[in-house]
Image 1 (cartoon, helix red, strand yellow):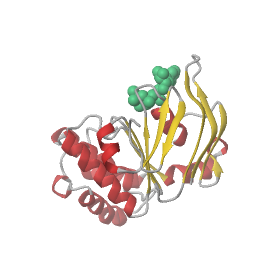
Image 2: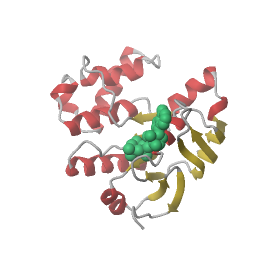
Image 3: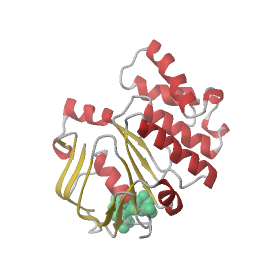
Image 4: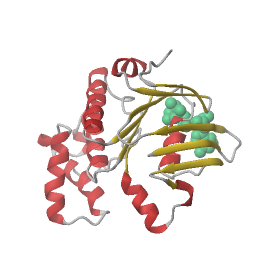
Length: 226
Ligand SMILES: Nc1ncnc2c1ncn2[C@@H]1O[C@H](COP(=O)(O)OP(=O)(O)OP(=O)(O)O)[C@@H](O)[C@H]1O
Ligand SMILES: [Mg+2]
């Protein structure tokens, strides 16, 4: 489903963010990408979303080289991915319902589909009572779950969460990871970039470790620090 083949990313200023990174992710897998600040986790996410292109090597998603995508294939690729950014990127002037609805409107979904899907995903993340609230009226954990709902609404094949436990309390963080686990059980491939060592250790899923842009471990039931 995802295949990094000796992928390197050197930013124009000379920073080496990733260096010959190789690993594969199978459909339906749950994967943590861990590593200290600056290890290259967000860069890896940006290559997947095609916000950045690799300097060297090849990244394939669903058998297609991401760098070669254009036009319809690029749109198709973006539809396959649901992304929860580190800072959520919610629209402050829109309610919870509208934030999720917009993700469907841009895909050309009809009003009646939107009216059906939005309450469904909001209840999946436990925000059924918060439909008409604006982001500033939500708690940090709720805002994050709203970002999850928005990423999930188009039913992506792959859900990518960049540091989903960074700005919330430990209990909300654990809830968020459990929610990602549930989404994974429903069939979605999930990739979580994080440095939340405790959660990674408790969750017992595959761990790919990055350090200074290199893969330093790949464990099936990994631990953060070992
Ligand atoms: N646009 C950019 N131009 C130059 N260097 C960059 C750019 N974006 C990131 N970097 C550098 O690339 C390296 C990897 O950054 P990246 O954001 O991928 O790390 P990270 O693992 O996500 O860190 P964190 O845990 O702090 O989010 C860092 O040294 C960073 O300073
Ligand atoms: Mg990052």
